[in-house]
Length: 169
Image (tube, helix red, strand yellow):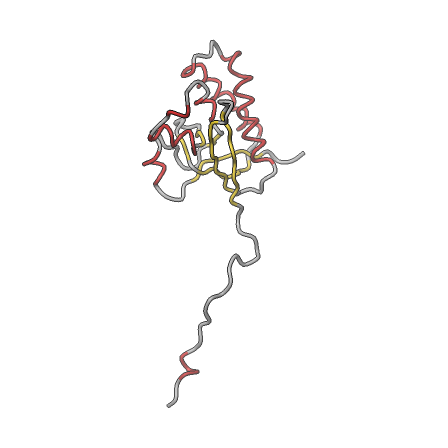
């Protein structure tokens, strides 16, 4: 059985604080979070809400957004905790009638995040791009930024020579 992998938020700079209404912190477990826009007309969203729709993963600590997530090792207890926390969020913030009704939906959302991470190496960075398809459905495209391999990523552009070679005394 393959080890369990999930997604965690990551930042390369402070831009998430400026572009999202609520930015996720570094190292939060995360999911796609597209469900948040299911009952909205995404074609009319503007500003920070539009940015969250177009490019934001949903973090679990404060339910803020992150532009990037990284594939991370997890265990079953962590996955189960995320399902429970998301189900609780559905009850508290989205009107789910109770945890029993919310748990299968939360399970599906976390399972989708697991599927995104499953075949990726640990430390692979993912981004998301969301659009509204012609049928009105939310379409998500995920891109990967893989960690560097042992092969050089670019060629050497200069050579350093000792000053002793150029001395004429």
